[in-house]
Length: 88
Image (cartoon, rainbow, N blue to C red; front, side, top):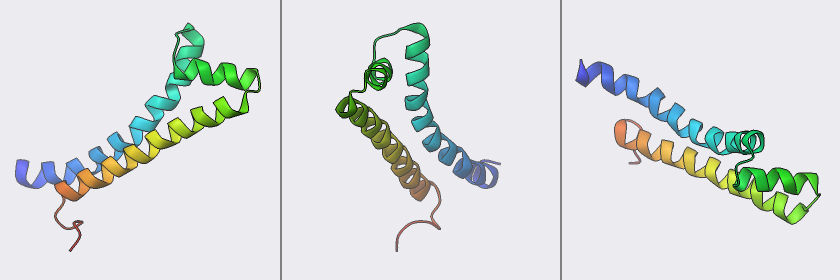
């Protein structure tokens, strides 16, 4: 069971985990705004409201970096989990 089923079920799980990380970062914007928690999301929303373009750019760039890190981590973990995908 572990050898055959777990290896095949692990690949989509790793992919979804890598793609969930960016949604957590983007979801922080909404949660921090609704509950008025101080953080990067609330700062970004306030920067949008006050038209502070450099701060909006920094917030979007930070979330973009999280997206890239999540995708890269998922790709690397899939490479370790599935020997067919490794570089030759």
